[in-house]
Length: 138
Image 1 (tube, rainbow, N blue to C red):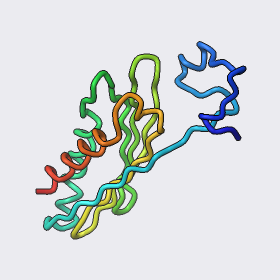
Image 2 (cartoon, one colour; image 1 turned 60 degrees about the horizontal axis):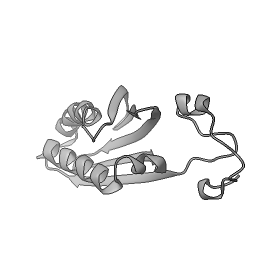
Image 3 (cartoon, helix red, strand yellow; image 1 turned 135 degrees about the horizontal axis):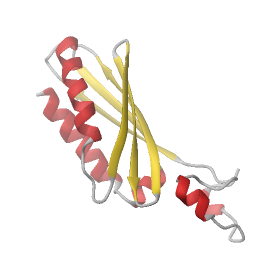
Image 4 (cartoon, rainbow, N blue to C red; image 1 turned 120 degrees about the vertical axis):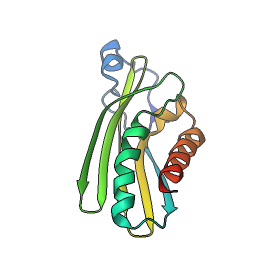
């Protein structure tokens, strides 16, 4: 498989693939993991209740020109698995992640396609996620 930077110049991206927000055949998508851990003194039950609220708010967070839709959230034991669609213009990607809640901390992990960072810088995403998580747990 070829990496994005090694994609042959002779290949072109079709308008159809842009409309679907997909990469052409033979191109692999590189993902980056964002991981944030915050301590709390709330106990697991109260932290879980606040994380339910946080998931909805995070999906509504605004980044310049990016819309967030199709939030899905499902608790599996003490882990909230989430996904949402982030769109800007013709580009649209599903972002997936999880939030592990325990008695003393919450760990958020999210897989973000590297291409997203062309639209919203990674430090900005990490800052918004960390700030809102800390806000919810204090």
